[in-house]
Image 1: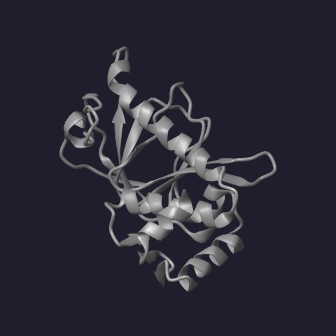
Image 2: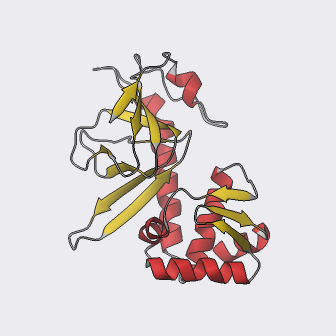
Length: 215
């Protein structure tokens, strides 16, 4: 891992989200750290006590199941935060999907920041609940459609969305095989709902139809 320094910033101004109170001002900000594709940011069981913001790139959060399978619980894109834990250890692995820079925010020892951290905790809970709803979809098309709608919304509603994650990543997130994910993408393309520009870029041609499929 390589790190480089940049100017210190106020966490409250840097992480403020529309419609949400500014999270907190947690004191000194660590340098921005660069992680090559596939490198570990933190490990399950590792010491917690900080959270992270993606400066650029993308991060996957996952656990390894007892049978060796990987279950991805979340993806985080530029501008999004992750790593907030209620306890003192991480319950998941965090890994850079592609070349990624993250900024680390550490808490002041002994400071009571519960009221400031509440928005982050609630946002994480909401996203986890939304993921459970996606996994509850009965068929693969509904799951992939819901995933694409989510990516559209998180990238500002753009017609063309970038998918930094692989088809295998998407499958591990949606509880589908890579073959099933690929078939669904092809089916959506054949129906004229999306256009596959390349493996990492998708143009949404019929967003309303896609949204209906994902409901």
